[in-house]
Length: 479
Ligand SMILES: [Zn+2]
Image (cartoon, rainbow, N blue to C red; front, side, top):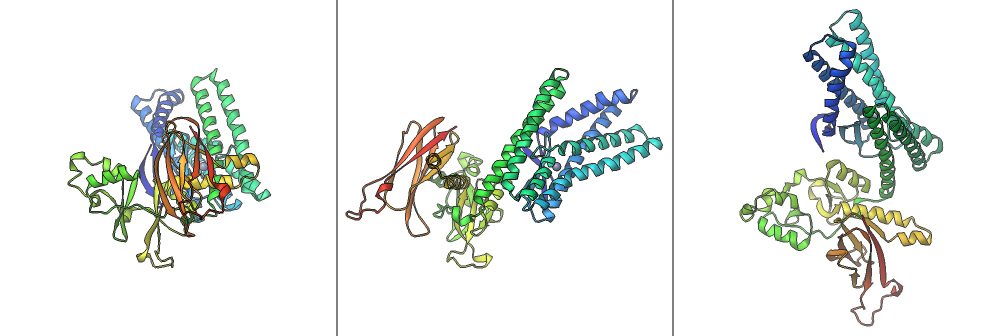
């Protein structure tokens, strides 16, 4: 949970609620622990002011550190979704990874270098203020900021991926072996070793100081989860690299009219089991309406209000062009925190001007997940891998889809106590065939099976050539 507090250079800045815990802790430790030890005889108000100033300065320092990463990245053409400050510092969410080792090095080094620079400047200011006998209220925050920036720089330079030092390490590996995936794997492994060392260190420190020990354990844990998340992100990006929006979108889109009442809309939600609809006036998309939009309106008003009154208007929709990369689709979903994106294209397939762009499809998060699963399994070679090609890992309650091969009438066989069939629909494939798409929901945790069975061909005599493909088994792992 984070709140937006500013926009700098077009980058939205967020602060996570966990940061407020740190804020209070800093005010407390600096103002009422460190300061009374080094400068006794100050008033409570003075201690409190120094504590507050220090916490604010740490906040600004981390922000400037993150902005340094982001600005270098943006100058090199990498879009920054947002910067979030949270418990352990900050994170700049890049919409893509730096494309070259040199660029990665520049982006990663920009943060710590900036922190070192602030530390040097503040040290100078502190020494000057000390010789000039400036009030402690000036001296102390300068001293603290110098110290804190030196710590931020030093801490980030630990070669534990995905921290800055680990990224710099990866950039050097990458430049040397020219293989990003392998370099990331090595850097992640080193990062994980460091994180475990930090955790072990934290456990030892625990015997001497509970607070510092817990702090180290938390940091170690944070680095270890970050390392694997980053590796996953990279694999996902690789899987999506060759694909465009039109390859992963759902083409037959169910839409609603802006003039129908919310009463009718709620019926549509029930019938079609979608979480949201594009709103179309004739051929033109005018907005989008979701279940959440409907829930915000009181039940009594449903008959009086129309879809057009509550929808997100077209201008605010996140859309992509059908030729945009699948990576960009995922990045937009993540940076905008949305579950569906509309795909625009000219209906006749030619490249038209912006004004005659039509809605040609929708991409939901499950479309992306399914694509990644398919890409993962298409890299399979051994028998065991082929078996796992049909393994679908899902979370309980999550909707997932299974698609039949093209041609014929397919039905799904499964145990309704374990899995529920939410909807099924026939869709046209680009090559003129038909596939059936089943949407399921996992009801309980465990390992279950869904078998797609091809029913006897309805057109008598016309036997499909792919007779050996008349049933397909999927293993569903619900966690
Ligand atoms: Zn950094």
